[in-house]
Length: 285
Image (cartoon, rainbow, N blue to C red; front, side, top):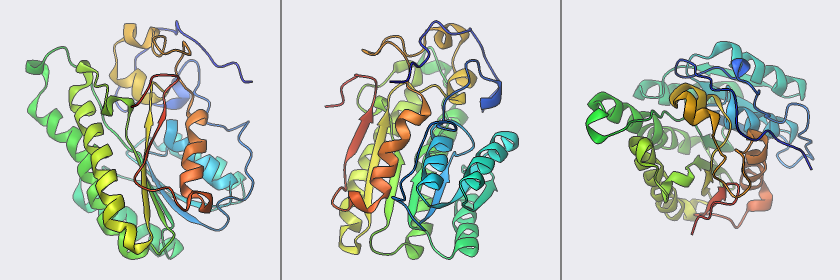
């Protein structure tokens, strides 16, 4: 079994949205460890927030399972190029799609560009997210509330709507929710509210798309060591991050990727409308 880092970590902080290559310790996205077995052979996947963290781990896993991957990200170009390097090293094609998903036009553009390049979308992973920490309701600027909802849930609606005409029976949509969807951290109030909305959106969409043969599921990670943490939490929060889980540490992105592979693959053909926790022992009931 891999021995992953436990807190305390160095009390570090980066500007939003953070860069994975500057984190200490560096997150493990499976670059050296994930081994594929052809479970996604010749599929086309669009993954948002795939420059780093969970999104990068998913992109690497998908590529090693045989998929070509379109990588949507904000503006972390160096991190995104590193993701592309690993996808291409697996012998698959990678399309980089920079831009702000808070912009409605960008949500449509990433779908159109993916379809122009690859012809279709078999797997859509809505993973991009924005969060900030706040001490009180009065501390939350109106614009932060709107931005969090635009990036985390409204973009998800827009991307799904744009992608559906290009997804055939047997396709899969996977949305990243969070343990915050039913155990909201008050210091992450806007983020936690969107994650509850994502869980609900996923469950409803799965029922709506069932007759088309398109499956929809969500993954609810617990504390995962990603750039989102060091760019949106205080140094003291970072230092002890994940220490309150039963496993006593945060998860690494590579530990989340396998559930996305299952839900994307034909092995998950009767799994829809579900939420899967990867939480280090924190229960989701």
